[in-house]
Image (cartoon, rainbow, N blue to C red):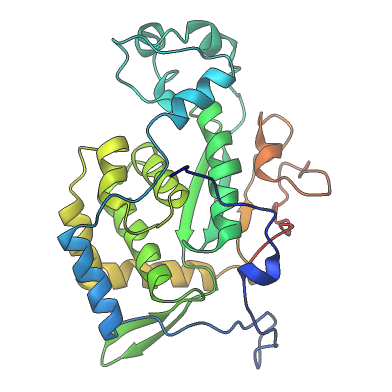
Amino acid sequence: MVWRHPQPHVSQRRWCHMRRSVAPGRKGVRRRVQPGFKSPSWDRLVSALALGHPAVPMAPAVPLALLAMGLGLGLALPSCDHPPHLWCSSWEIAVACQAESHCANLSRPTAAPVQLSLYYESLCPACRGFLVQQLFTTWLLLPTDVLNITLVPYGNAEEKKVSGKWQFQCQHGLEECLGNMLQACLMHEAENFTTYFPVIFCMESGSSTIKNLKACLQVYAPQLDAGRIIACVKGELGAALMHRNAQLTDALDPPHQYVPWYGGGSGLGEGAVGIEAVTSSPTSPCRSTRKSCRRRPRIHC
């Protein structure tokens, strides 16, 4: 089966079914969400994670290298056992991976890194397209000290406390709730952004964002234990992490109206090479170093 990226040209109406109404006492958009958390179907989904799944067509290990080749980085030597996004992290790695000329041409910014936060949902096709086709590609090709990214998987979900425990409903149903929580637990377990972002890229690139967890870990982060991540989802920690993401999302000012919703802090200006790809829109990118960058994607959920 041929692996394909999520298609950004598919009709928005087919992607996201929503009901627009103004929430009482608050500006914004309330969306209809599907039943989502702590039901028998949820328990079956989580249990199936521990048992494992047959292989699901997913983004193979080669796209990172192919992307690097297409931008003139060349093929890595057999002695290079580092992923492309780390080739310029040290001169020794650059030499081993034959990336000296590319790394030497990268201008090191004198300004503070660009802060970019992405609020998204694991099954929203617009979020998947933006993360896979734009954000990850831009991050991969920039020096490590140019762009600091914060990922917040929650989006248009809703939470409520039942018998002292947080429960969630997600716009695209049970599987999205599980995908959001899996990624939150992955981030907690990995801690290092350069470790978990390629895994999330892999999960979002595949036909299923949850069934490819173990396969993506084997390719991009074999040092991580899938069992610990699944235990996080099944335990109280997963719900606590999702509650934190709910708080971060609800604290947005102005409130988010759709996903993907992304914003940048100070330092967002012309000096950040490639940031225009992150903030692509019919209008020009942010120019002020102190202005937040929130643009309406052409397709969203």
